[in-house]
Figure 1 (cartoon, helix red, strand yellow):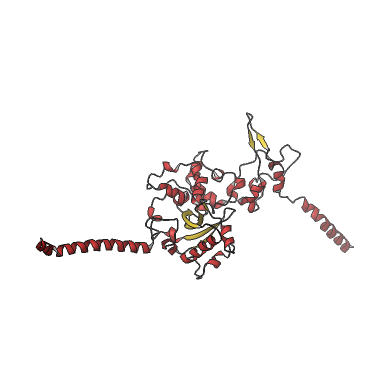
Figure 2: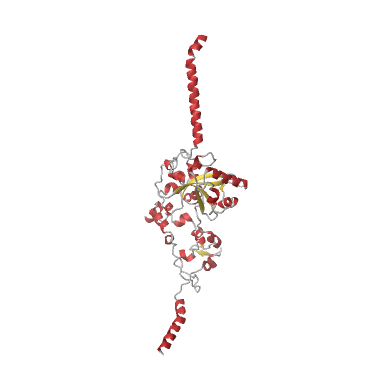
Length: 367
C-alpha cells in the first residue's frame, strides 16, 4: 500500500512539474513584436509644442547592421522592457531608459572613459560625445574596418571637428594626411596601426569591393592568400601583386593600387587624446613599425575587411602604387640611378675642369 502511495505521489509530481515550471518561464520578446509598431514609417511621438519625433526603425537596415547580423534582440539593448502589456496604450515602460552600450562593449567603454570625450562627460559637459554621437543611430551601426581613412574621418570626427583649426604643425600638404591617414592613428596613441594597400578604380575614384576581386580570381576570402601566394612564404610579394592586378585587368576590372595608414578596429581607438602623436618618423622612416605591419586589404559589403600580409619589399619595388611616404617608401633602384646621375655630373664637371687645367700651356702657345 505504501508503495502505491509513493507511486501515485511521483506520478502526480511528474505531471504537475511542467505546469509549475511553465509559470516561471520568461519568454524573450521577439524583434518582430517590436516592429509591429516601430516598423511603421509614420510611427511618431508627439512632443510638447506640437513637434514630433520619429520612433520608426527600418527592419531591413537593422538586419544588415552589426547588431542585426549578430542576432541582437531589441530588448538586449532596451533591457528595461521585460514584457509587453497590450492592455496599455504603450505596452512597455515609457520613456525607456537610455541604452547602456557598456553592457556588451566593456572594453570600448573603458577606453572611452579614458578619452578626452569621456573625461569631458565625467566633468559634467552634457554636450560631450557619447557612443551615439559618433556611431549615429545605433539601430544601423555598421562595421568600419572596410571604410577608407577618409571615410572614417568624414563619417565621424569631421562631423564636429574642423581639422584646419588644429593642425598648423603639419607641413603644407596636410590635406594629404587627412585623405590617407585616419584621425585615430595620431589621436588614439595606443591603438594598433597598420599600413594597407587596396585595389582602387581611379576613374570611379573608389575602392574596388573585395567581392569583385575574389570573384575575378575564382576564389573566396578564406583561400585567397593560398591561391595568390605562389612561393608559399605566407606573404604577397610584388610579383604576386602584379599577377593579381594583371588578372583583374584581364577580367575588365580597371585596378590600380592605393595605400593608407589606419588604426586597427580595436577597442583602444576609443581612447582619443587631445595631445596627438606629432613624431613624423612614426610613419616617415624606413624603420617605421607601422610600415612593417603591411597588408593587402579586401573590403566587404557589410563593412568588414580581410587583411592579407604583404612583403615590405612591395613598397620599394618598381610596381606603380599610389602611395608615397617621404623617406619611407624609397625605390632602391631609383636611388642608385639618382646617385649615378649625380656622380656622373660631378665626374663630367671634374673631368672637364681637369682637362682645361692640363691644356692651359697648350692653349697659351696657340695664342
